Image (cartoon, rainbow, N blue to C red):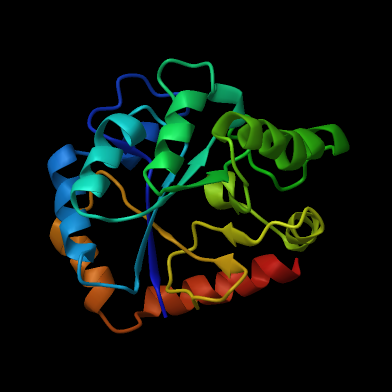
Length: 217
């Protein structure tokens, strides 16, 4: 089994784009300490959502220093936003051996989309990110972690290789649907170390059950 951990922003959130966003930013020191915890853990996988500028300014140099790799799920609708990753940043990430995936266009939930929004979020955003990053976009991360059976079917039809959720439990390395733990401002190096070392908890069992319900509804 593997433990997927996901970051959203590093440093200080200067301006929230959605209510509560600042709660998903971590300090640079905590971020680097968490990276150090993953160095000898092949079962730890790292990803970044939302395509914030700190991915290039802080995360990439820290990953490079530790010879770590990660997947960056960017937003196609923010490629021209100075607070977000640009096409040049995405190409730089690829040049340093990182992977780039899709987080959609507008950071809206993908569950229950209209046909037009579905095409924009699942297809057009992917095409824009392919062009911007200069490479394949095979993986997707669900904005806000929401999904149901219909959405998963749509993502399979779109031929995404792997889809990442915000469900908080360990994942099988070959699973198409990958659960992740989002790192928040309340986390510490110790709390993330505990994710890697603890036995399965009651809360994780509940999350697995909730995921099964989502896949069937």
